[in-house]
Image (cartoon, rainbow, N blue to C red; front, top):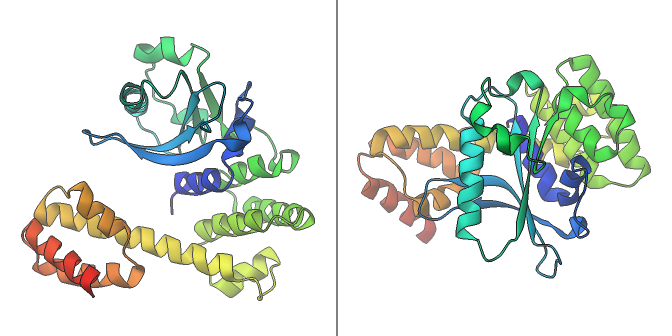
Length: 278
């Protein structure tokens, strides 16, 4: 599970968290809905879109991008997707704002000259997690963001224990689950018992650990299978991609065995059809 995946889980659970990074959040910030949006008639999918409530006075749509690796094409892609989305939805929204979250400033594209007017327009906020300070001095949500960026194992464990204690005091079970998910991602080589002991969790609280490991295994399997399918049968249509996204871990493992015999999209369609009927 990649760090940006954890961020989007965070945003899905707590949409208002994004607005802690925005200087002037909209009045309806707590009622925004976080979505992954596909822009029709293109290959673009925007993972982080915050849609205003239907009764909002100001129809401002917010876009979020999380970046933990160097990508020189980041701004090209981000602004292309952003404006294509606005073009396709021109009558639904009357303003926009973008938040780009980097693990550190060194991950920014080297040359931003082409996009300087947009980046300096006041409609874009660039956030560098390594410049936000100690996670213990932040609200719980921002502390979770910073925990994803901690590289030292000792600091990660200490930070996780601090956030878990704060979450327990505030009875925030969702925060406890997300802290555990982040630590499972960082220490994927450890068992459930080892992680529970390291974090000071009771063994009666293993659900988040078990789910996080399962999600990581599922994501890894799905990514591997899609790469193999692309090599074997070419580009996968959106309809089939949606079916693959809905497969369980056991079904993905079965598909991994079956795809060795595939040579056309029809083979994949037939296999998926059999799973649905089964």
